[in-house]
Image 1 (cartoon, rainbow over the protein chains, first blue to last red):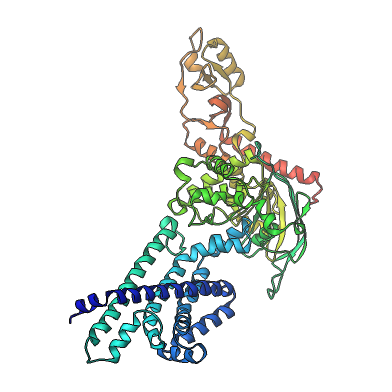
Image 2: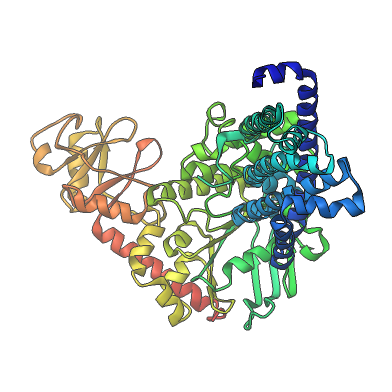
Length: 219
Length: 392
């Protein structure tokens, strides 16, 4: 049986797993984006807390994903909970870091102008600083999404949902029938999803940066 | 929108001090300054003299450590800082326009904060763009980065004026512009100020800009105090200290030339006549005057030609076309410096001065300019004596 026959025979299952994978990644990135941006916003003005937040996220980042998932089994059990937790934790680092970098990169002159016109701290943040830092933050979210794609596949190790199931079941019976087909299907599925998501971010970036400016940089 | 723009209100600084935490010497020390309503007051000094700090305390971007600032009689401490700033226009270096907003959105920021409705904001934006000399149709929906530095700063000024505040703070607004754009936007600011009569606090380290723009100039010295607060002519003719003299950097007579308009000095008078004057009468005038020439004007009093007795001898009837055509003239709004330039390049020693509608109002020669400068210096000296040197 070649790859095409394999895919054709299990089409419904593969589509289901792909949708699950996409939905898991999207939701995890969304959670991570909200958390990450909030943490970034809360800490970017003060060097110490922002260094702490980045360091903690950095340490989490260095834990191998299999180990992380394994460590999450005792408190959270198997299935969706440990998968989502792990993906969110990994996705935090690029988002927090880019939020801090992006907000710090906003020209202080513009913040001064915003305050001088009579905008409150909050309004200056939402109307001026975040929109200007947005391209950098968006890049962070994009990197986080790519990460989440990969980690999401590994999540099958703790019985998480998604295309990882194909990969792991294939790897488990390596040498057996359809082992390579299953692994390939899972891997290719993840790769295609990653490309689709990336394309989405390119479009999102284009539609959410008016005036086609670059990273809040001044002309 | 009120039909008439709101005029300025006075600003009073009372023993204002600012000490930054861990900054050693206070950046501003017990500063007293009365800024009259509707005038441009320039805070002038080298970097680090506290001029920007002083200005930023007025809209409370920096909170004074002690002392009071009264704006239109109201203590700024009693007003919520965000609300206070919405009623004080703020123009900064390089305009500080928000790059992610269109020109219109940039200008609309303060009216939005004040909760104006859409239609009123849109009307106001167009009105302001026209006011600062930008065609609304062309510029309303463009992004700031498509504008030149000078245009960006015009939008910056429009944004500051959006809610028609009585007070305008300008922090080295034209510092980053090339000399030509800077001159032009300075002229435009003065033209606007003629119309609007706001109270403007203008920070700069450029002496020539200060002399040109300021009704009054406060020269500041590190750390944070005012060493002289006076009108430009007085600062030039009577610097309060060696520091002021050094900061001005000499050339005060040349600067007086730049400061003074031709229309403001006493002009020379030469005999003149219109084309239809009788030649005999004009000859008699020339003889009485003793300088040996006269100016012929057309029916609208515009200069046509210089005539001498030689051109008129033996002729009768109206003067008509005679003598050498007038090639150089000086406008009454020109500075004495530009006038001097024209004089030095002219074929004649005397050049006619044109007032409104190009009509002859007098004449200028090198001697006239010289005595005008002497007169200004004498006048300033006298003014000082009258006040008994109270300022120093």
